[in-house]
Length: 101
Image: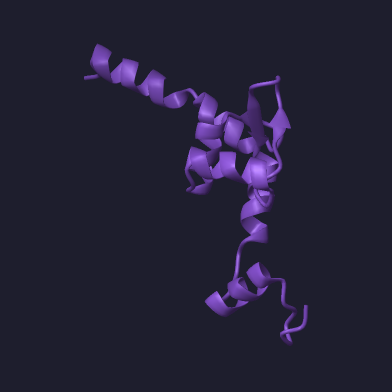
């Protein structure tokens, strides 16, 4: 026998959440807190990277509000994916594979 609570719980689970719908859309714009959580960073890290460069591309929504497209966050993470610490150090220093750079 199905109870009213079971029916309510099923209805709640069967509706896709806004977060899931946004995560599928590469053009979805996320606020800094959402973006930071998505890439495993802090909001302060994103703010610092906006000032100094080197972070994910962002969108100026107004003079004081910024957002991040999911696509830009995915590209940032992919560009910072390395096979070893040595490879990451090379990329950070700007050295080429032979130590040139």
